Image 1: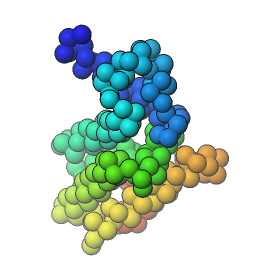
Image 2: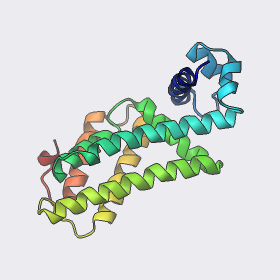
Image 3: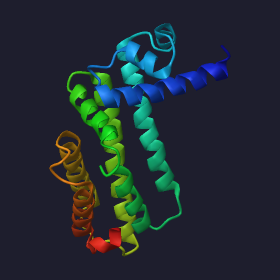
Image 4: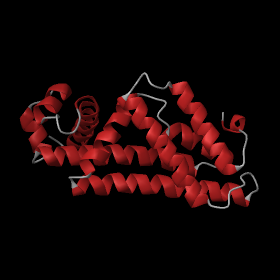
Length: 200
């Protein structure tokens, strides 16, 4: 196997592992499940990952890096702070597939017992809040937002989104995705001195 082929195969295995973890959960995912879903031998999985724990940790790290890459694209854009905020809220909000949020909720739970997963989930959580606070600060500086505490606002907005994501992933029919989107806009608007319609 060439180095390039090995890198491509590794990327495909990590993507597949993320899909399997989202469906089965971290605790219930076996290397055999990932191998079967990827259409490869279990030996090839162990070629890339020496242990099941290493596979799960690298898959979680891969998911974190994918999310951070999407976040970086928003932040690097030349869009004004309000446009960046809209994109960040859509990126983070639990309005897409619940399976991706299921993986994060599962990851948070496993982080209580697995230091490597805790480190990875903390990196994403803190990075998201820091970047959200930076966008809010930019919006305050240019006069678009009215917010005396950008860091606190970033934490409060994130906490509401995290809580709603848990409800959506665990109790799917309790609230709708539309309600979640409306409530996130309402909370963010109140924090930043905006009208909710400005965040549509």
